[in-house]
Length: 111
Image 1 (cartoon, rainbow, N blue to C red):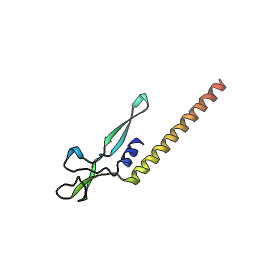
Image 2: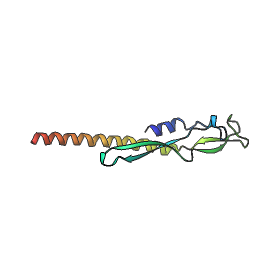
Image 3: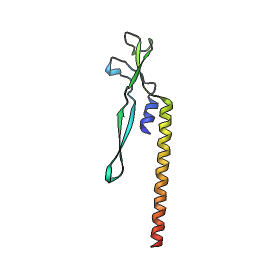
């Protein structure tokens, strides 16, 4: 959810295609890996490729000799869906934990 929020917040953070000091925002994505027999998940942030798209804007202070600037490669609809999926996944995990706790309590009551 943090990656999507960051991408949405910086969707308009354009920059120079040639000057690394004024580079456009690089969107991030996440990749999750199971931890095997230990259980759990490890999530890491990865820079999205391609990070930006060249866009014609001759009035920008970051314009190159062709009138192009770099605009972050962020799809607002995709990021909104990712945030909704993360929220639903969180709710589902909480429900699972709650049911597991209730089942454990019932088991203890029967013993």
